[in-house]
Image (cartoon, rainbow, N blue to C red; front, top):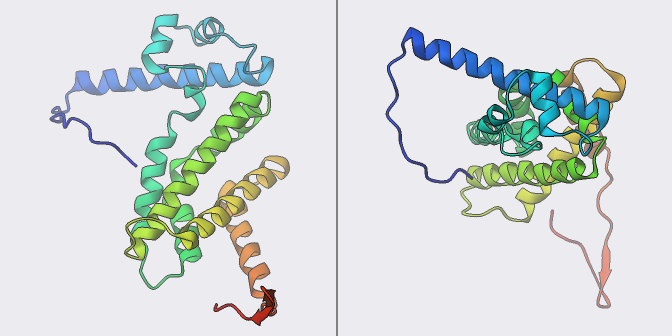
Length: 224
């Protein structure tokens, strides 16, 4: 979750401020594009910051003004996206089931924030590096933590319980499965995610009642 930060008074918008902001945005995007291209071409470990800076036509010092490490080029935008996802889930109607709330929050509020082409390039870059695959796994765990926390809030819990974590894990599995399918088959990312959620609901609807379970010599049936 976000930590406490110093509140900085907002500056009045001026033509100069707007121009500087646009220039910074273009520089950041140029660095990201150069890095992702090089990661796919050469591999993450084989790419140096000097090469990224040269491809982006900036100095090495400029690179480090925007990113602390090479990995930050891929994962630096995720914190804001996580915060938006948490707000979106927490803000869904209380009458919605948890998986429905997550599905609607992801499709309506979260997917519009992400660049699907950038996601595709991230996936290709991560495939070149065990380190990036490990960082992607860590990112997935944080993604699940955000969802579990939002679900706990919807239920008035101080901390997520087993149900929250299980639903968060299922949701991440849906997203991961949809992304992999989309990367291999093409099409629209939002549609792939929506279809994956629909498939999960169909699978769950066809599951038979749970059989009796034997434990410690006794037969019992767990409560639903």
